[in-house]
Amino acid sequence: MFEYEKPDNLVDTLEQSIGLFPDNPLFGTKDSNNRYGWITYKEFGSRVDNLRAGLAQLGVGKGDTVGIIANNRTEWAVAAFAGFGLGAVFSPMYEKELPRIWKHIILDSAVKVLFVSTPEIFDAVAPLMDEIDTLEKVVCIDSNGQETMAGLEKKGKASPVPSVSPGCGDAACCIYTSGTTGNPKGVMLTHGNFTSNARAGYRRFPNLSSKARSISILPWAHSYGFTAELVNFIQFGGSIGFMEKVATLADDMASLHPSFLIGVPRIFNKIYDSILSRVNEKQGITKFLFDHALAAAREKRELREQNKPSAGTNLKFALLDLLVLKKIRARFGGNLEGALTASATSNPEIAQFFEDIGIPTFDAYGMTECAPAIAMNGPGQNRFGSVGRPLEHVRIEFDKTGMESDADDGDGELIVYSPGIMMGYRNNPEKTAETLTPDGGLRTGDRGRIDKDGYLYITGRIKEQYKLENGKFVFPAALEEEINFLPYVESSMIYGDGKPYNICFVVLDMDTIHTYAEAVHLKASPEEVLSHHATLELISSEIKQHLRPNYGSYEIPKRFIFLKEGFTSENGLLTQTMKIKRVSVTKRFKHLINEAYAGDKKIITA
Image 1 (spheres, rainbow, N blue to C red):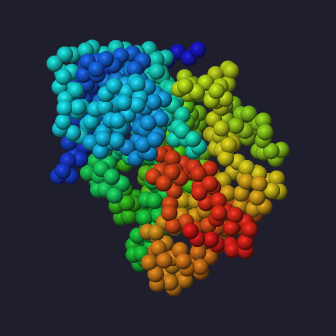
Image 2: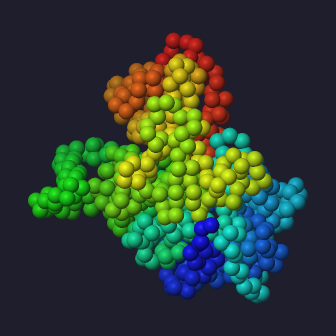
Image 3: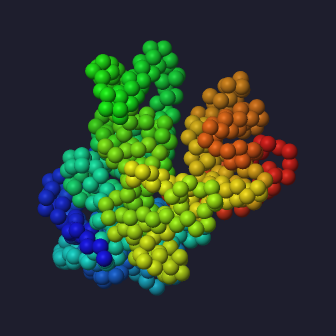
């Protein structure tokens, strides 16, 4: 059995950091004057102490569940650590979620006390206290009434209650995976799962210190944001500033000067498209210097990889870096040293671009069921296209059962053995038995391979693969990632299970699509583009051309369905973690699928 290092629970982790870094800033929040105010570790600890005592007065104790419906904010973390200090389980939910999902999670996780961010959410969920026996109290954060978090903290301050130190095997969180079918499953994760996982990830980045700062972009309600940012930064005394909203991200970065980001490839894809678009619009000397700066950076990187440094190349790069690349880095606040990315593998071209401009991105791989990190790239060991080497104490085996005969050597379903593996799914023993092997492994459902140097490559999702009518296997996610790399595509979905060929749903990025309308001399609004056949034909042709170098002809879609409405969590076509609900999409657009296969149209709009 694995022996966890100390501190092996989240309560001791926080209290150790409060002792080591009492005056360090922890959380930064933007005020009405667009200025960031900070709370220190010591001040945060006092709020946790006060709320813990307040929760104790409400009868919260070991094994009870404290829930929250809120975006990332100081109060989110206060509620989590206050509950941990009583031995309670924390169950977070997204603000932008369907009310029926809130109800399912509150019922399934047996929430006793629920924190909500706004009066509107309070009004939506308070009636559930009459429907769900376990739900005894709903507490509003942004409110001046009696049932507020501030009021509960005030009551607790008057009657302090010491924290308990949970065991490493005690449940800490019940985090619900955003299921692409049916209700989400509650993943039960222990204190040891989180502390060991955060520590292993931290050891990949020796440059992180108590001076490190992140800008919080990803939700802590997902295990990736919770472990990689919240728990990770707390363990080494770092600070986290909250992004106000996506639209203010650039300004917030300029104010916060983050040194490290926890993100997803999609963020960097958009930034990459934006940088190239601006440079191409300016042309002239700007584009000339930009192209030469990238060429010098690429040459320097390639020579470094060959252990052939060149003084001339280094000098040329230093000059162009000062003239061009430093200004690009300034848009990120000027201090950004790198970023961890997960949820999908980065496009190697984009990853190389950010490496060359001085902001390397490091792909990682994980699952909520593993708390979540399994493999990770890092400084000095960053292989483009891979998701890095397995973390310490992680072992990966491959199950080739059911693989097609021409599968690559070593290619199979990943079976993971790790100290981060979950206790199981709450109230779902059948699904737990399907996912956990008798010897303690985790069936990931992902297909991959490890190269001779130990780097892991994810090659597909077992459950999403399907066979065409000709018997050929298709992994739609890989095709979709490649299509989504195109600047004018917001999202896409490949379909073709049992069919003679693939078709592709496409949602266009209307901010960039006007460029392609101009290519066919179309003077129209972006929305009107969807009714212009020549433009859609051009886009379809470019998608096919983009896929040809890396995919077989049978994989490339032959027909396209262009949708006006995107895939969103609000319309039920996307999970909170940005995964397409394939069953929901195919069900909603069944008539279009039938039309694509039955008729002669190669392009359909809806």
